[in-house]
Amino acid sequence: MKKEILVTGGVGFIGSHCVVELLQVDEYEIIVVDNLFNSNLKTLENVEKITNKKVKKFYQIDLRDMTELSKVFEENNIEAIIHFAALKAVGESVQKPLLYYQNNLVGTLNLLELAQLHHITKFIFSSSATVYGIPKHLPLTELSPTEAISPYGSTKLMVEKIIHDLCRSNPSFHAILLRYFNPVGAHPSGLIGEDPKGEPNNLFPVLSRVLLGMKDELTVFGNDYDTPDGTCIRDYIHIQDLASGHLAAIQSLFAPLNNNDDDDHHINGDVGDEMRRSNCEIFNLGTGSGISVLEAVKAMEKVSGKKINIKYAPRREGDAPVCYANADRARHLLSWSPRYTLPDMCQHLWNFHLLHSQTSSSSL
Image (tube, rainbow, N blue to C red; front, side, top):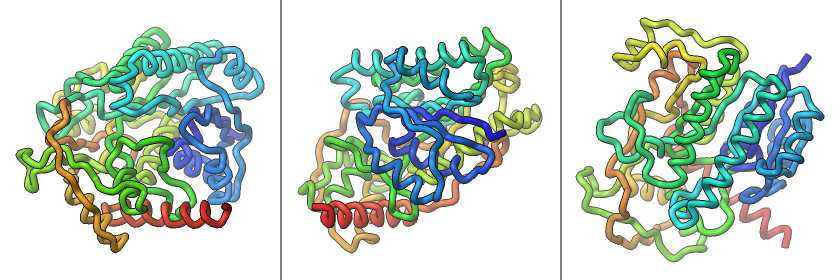
């Protein structure tokens, strides 16, 4: 009997790459829910083309619609949930905080309520490094202080707390919170990748649009930071590595984690009993090293063979000079580690955009 896994936001950038990984495991059947607000159903077709497999069912549903969402649980025998669906633009969240709180919190509460009602005890939440705020010490570990500074980051941190409370109240409910850093790149096939609707907020989608002639220049906010080239440094992780992290997490829920106290103590130092033995586990997913804005620019210029015009602007409020992860916990307890390099990230992203632009042109 195959295990049915519900993936919310499964047509989005991260969700679609995760679905590719899941479909390649014969013992899983995948059910996808997505409202297609910032995604396209063509992505799901390309996922099935990559894997030569089909998802069991697709539902175009907003998680806030409890009536329609209930049908997903009634019509299937779901054993685990991977929850990606959320609004995710940090800048927009500052401008529209109520939209983000309403969408990200209500949708998750509905999902958790139905999970409890249908006795689903395995849950993976797509969290974010934004829960840490501006780092006080580096690298960031799972025990680093959390202090989200944007409404988006606050919704992620609030959902983490909700899940923690649920796990405390129900010892049979097991959750994994994956805090990931900066996902970039695309599937090596070039068939799926990141192409956000509207104006992109993250560095690599903006770089892509400059290279494609959709924008005149890249605005770099601040070149006077205390870093080697004066620009911000971030921990960029290939989307395929992020997807493999989710696969490792779901497999660990079906085969309990190796909670070796000595290993965990060695990984994070003074790890408290709650974190070590809790049925709610937290893992950073990052490479453990940083890449500056100008390093990213040079890498994209190299793979594309094109020059990127840069305009420098003052620092943005809330931007940390440097941010990168300690992902040792995932390495040891999930047997996961990133495999792809910055050149891989850039090459795969560029391949996706070249193929995507050719496909769009040929369909006109």
